[in-house]
Length: 409
Image 1: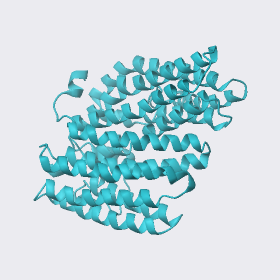
Image 2 (image 1 turned 90 degrees about the vertical axis):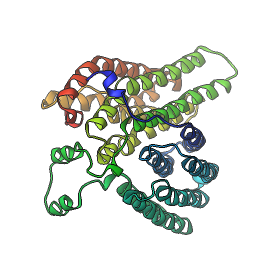
Image 3 (image 1 turned 120 degrees about the horizontal axis):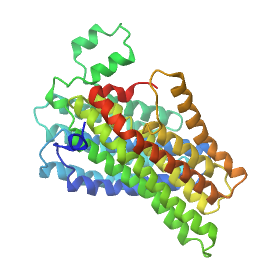
Image 4 (image 1 turned 90 degrees about the horizontal axis):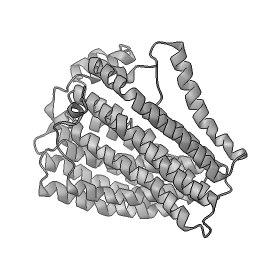
């Protein structure tokens, strides 16, 4: 497989989609700020719930454009209309640390009203689009109900809404007859992956790999930008330009660059290639992008919050753990660490690498916050070097067997 083969063909991201993503820049910034203002594991959990809800709202509009080839004015108007409730939801996030998410939930219910109308209108005659419209109509009702109740029922109702959205958007691609025959039959992980590598019989369910890869790549750039912004704002808040200041500033910027390298030098093109090889199977799109990118995306937010706390000299011990654990989650979900399939040594090597990454958070006991960021940065640079070293072998293996991307080490 060549790099050209991994990027040829497919539709491009439209200008209105880029404008829509600007709203999510604001929302993502608010989520990162909430983590920094409440640097506890419970605060991180609340932020993850908020981010997950925003993530699936964004996914809805990504799939809307992905499955409709023409960039018509009607689709642009729907996307532009959606910027309003999404912007209100971002503003309402200021109440998230106190647990008040009523306005946030109602705003995202309004966004789902737009999706419920947009899918059938933008693709008239499509059974898949009608199904999505009905599904988002149900989600609207669930989100309104969630806004009217307190915790923990709100979280449960929203979780049900998001699960059913995942079902009708990307997971309902199997043929009904095959699904009925296998309802009582256990399938191995390999069988499920082989099924996901088969092109969908219904053209309406086919996913455009090039568009999806570019859209998610741009969103990852947005999240990487949060780290750069965290470094910049931290630098502006420091009056003295000491050695510690320069160490933190340069380490933060190099860390962002290393994380960029890990994703775009290898993972981005590999993910697109595998989705192309599946013929645009929506189940594979879910595994690689909608579900598969959730962990690295939120990991970048946690890293951004940890860097901000560290460079501001925050006393919370969570700062170093946010950066270290965030890096570990990012490396796992982007498959950056080397694997040796079928060997005990490969499994041990992967476990030791992940454990060592997480344990970088212990350095906070003996080093200054900026020195911890510098140590994590050196580790990330080493991981980026490993990614570049492994890339030719991974690409060669994928040419022979695209499913090798998912084989356990």
